[in-house]
Length: 175
Image (cartoon, rainbow, N blue to C red; front, side, top):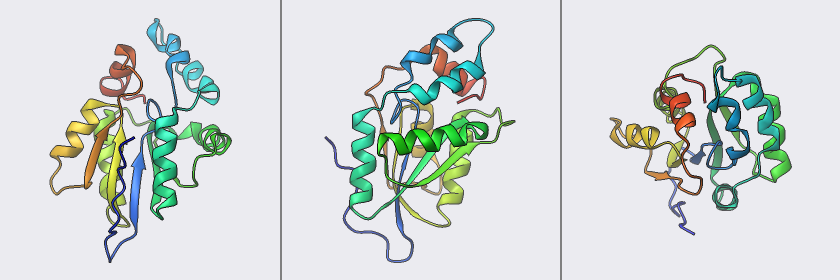
């Protein structure tokens, strides 16, 4: 496994590792049928998230960061209304404690825009060392951001990308 956490934190701010949820820690494939049909069933899609299997690759990265004393931040395009279920799911998986940042319920901007905004605010409080996300558009946008928001950006590739999920993230502003 690729170890993403550096050993030398910034002297002025605490070091943090930021991980996406869906496709990075949470395996969403069992609930894709809710958004592959018309009309899309967003309530069903998000309600079923409590049954997501964990991706061991993502969980290992979160644990590695915490073991090395880095703050773990979970950054997701999930809507705020899913907070209780999301926090409970993380607890059941044995994920390290960490801040959970979600999309406002009424926010329909593309995931890359929402996440860039969160990262800018996180940079006021943390030395954000690593971002792990499964969305190539998010990864590309963060890599191109100026000033630099993250020391290293990793594209999580352990879950195949679904066309319906890509549309939801980029065109519909849903995850």
